[in-house]
Amino acid sequence: MKRILITNDDGFDSVGLQALKEALSPLGQITIVAPATEKSACGHGMTLTKPLRFIKIDDDFYKLDDGGPTDCIYLALHALYDENYKPDLIVSGINLGSNMGEDVSYSGTASGAMEGVLHDIPSIAISQVLQNENIFDFDFTLAKETITSLAKKILHQGFPLQTREFLNVNIPPIPKELCKGIKITELGIRMYGNDAHLHRNPRGEEYYWLGLHPLSWRERESKNSDFSAIKEGFVSITPITLDFTARNRLESLQNWIQQ
Image (cartoon, one colour):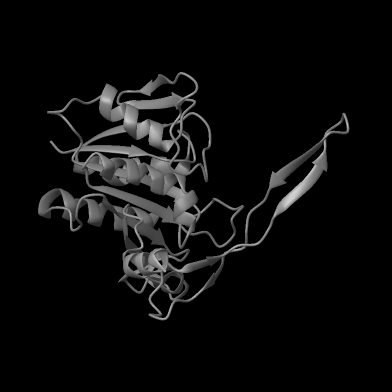
């Protein structure tokens, strides 16, 4: 039986995590390790300054008190599996909200997949784009069918990427019947503002609360970004590599140093 490890940065009780479990359960043995609380935008951080504890929710279902998605995958692989019994696939999601463009660098969802491929396990991050970032009541049908199809192909045909690369999947906020198909995309250029709100607590002390940035973006020359695919009604699948080296700048940087 195939083994699938799943996590979600929205927390162990996320409706997206439940939808992911429902989609993948027919394909193999599912193990869930997810944060005890929401860890959105936590990035690829690992908890080093405090202890972490597995809390069993159900058979093969644990929440990690109080780690993020990276901790969940890292500890699951070391505590719940051994070298001869690794999962065949890791899936992080279904995230409530998009993970496109440079948002991938902030994303706890993407970080769960990043940790998976660091351990040479095929990994996918999947996110459901929302029409309204504050409304989570919607149908996961398209997301579930997409991840089921991708997981089947990987489990039976192999992973299409090389080591330390993962698939970043974004689902458009439309009914399944309106989806135009799948596009293989590159990361678009995310445009950021400043949505930090200043408040005072009852004692008069100042604090800031970070809000949600509008989903603004700028197209690349290729006109093939994840943002444009979602806008046009396609599922976006972007291959992501963990190699951050700007290879086309190596020679020019060497020349600059020598000047």
